[in-house]
Image (cartoon, rainbow over all chains, first blue to last red; front, side, top):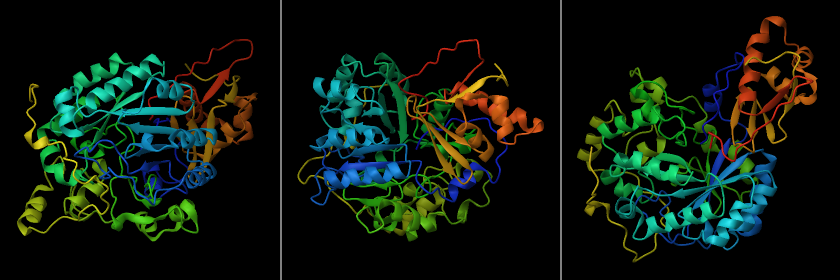
Length: 393
Length: 105
């Protein structure tokens, strides 16, 4: 999700923007498109449980057809990801096709495949943003989550982009219990490369379901993060921390869940989900190969129609902060076993804690992610044994 | 600065407008900024902003009365700051700047 410019404007002719967005737009503002489930890494928090390519993945021609639809819908840009999108042999073909058809591309990569030549090729393209994932300011913290050697690979990609004069690329960090104290160092790293900093929220999605308890920030860390972000409005967040707005002033950007209303996910096999963090049948709206294509799924699927209905505030009804946090993240609730009308599991006011305790006491398993493309036999990095050398808050 | 009513308004060629129930989305492919245009009359102004007409002329054509001018002027000022539009008073020159990446990502 993008951080919109808060344009001072004439009073709206009809209802407020947030209400408009809740009702859903005729086309997404932007969407995430995971190009492949193949990945050379096995990050412990991978929201799509990626590793192995799926034989049903969209062909090059099918990808072009999706771009054609997005152009007709005037979806201004897509966030390409994976898996590792650069593992697709036709990666550059798809990117070039999108950019040529007025669909801007922002893509997330672990950087492994950005060598000197790829960096030059990327630097030569307009309407293309690159986002390098790096989940710690040093190798020990990053590699514990993303795997041995992944820090060095990302740094090397950044060196290549810098040498190719790409301009201000982005480096992107998923905030965890272990890297939240490194944000200043991380910012310094971004500044060193002339890069723009982006930090986003960890979700208990994909393999993240299994590492959530170990990795998600503590309440004290959430407060620390909130004030850090408030002081740095230029840091991008994908508008993912709106649940923190319950602490006081709203963070910049759209403070609401846009799932199925203003954003969605197209996965590598063409399945359309409400957002990138809910790869589960419960949130599957359709497939781009369906008769009506992506447009049909977006405009008429039962799921998206339901998500655009006025929702019950549920357990949050009596909370004065509801207008600020909007009840938080749907995906986070779902994968820890809460109801969608319950408070966010990371509710900064602690309102989810009795409910989480009840879920734990009942011993009922939370819904499991339904797609698993993890590579068999590949040991995951182990954050449990992490011994950070950094000062802890 | 305030927007001069005799300034000529041009929508940046890299900006695309997408019609919406509430008005339109404006996206700048150069600096990646996204703006929500929350009033159909503002959209009408931008659609007609082809670099040949002044603020006053555009407002008149969109039926924006004197009383409604301040809020629309403020909106134009914000849009100029994010480089969505260029507003030039005839006889002066103005250097437009662009950046590879904006605050909106």
